[in-house]
Length: 105
Image (spheres, helix red, strand yellow):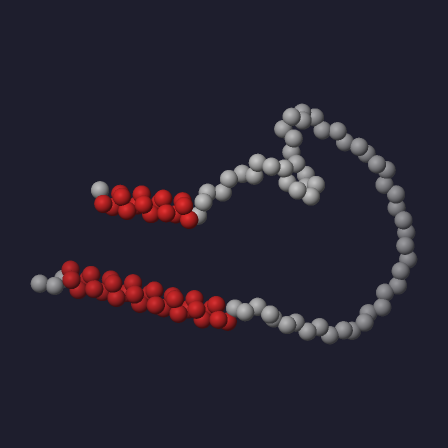
């Protein structure tokens, strides 16, 4: 009974923290295409294609580029490594504690 209560509480906390995404009910902005469910047929207009011939010359110019990495990921990686080590050793010691208590006479 206690385990069911804990699982139900954990589920409700997860639903509260990470709300379920619902579909968008309004039309998208900026003239994006929408689907009209009332349409039963599609009309197509055909336009004649025209071709144009253009002559051009190209010259290659050697340039150098510099890439500057502005991402600040070094400290984030270090923090994640520290959290991983602390969490891993914590789980190890908890397991070791319960194993020692299980086999203690």
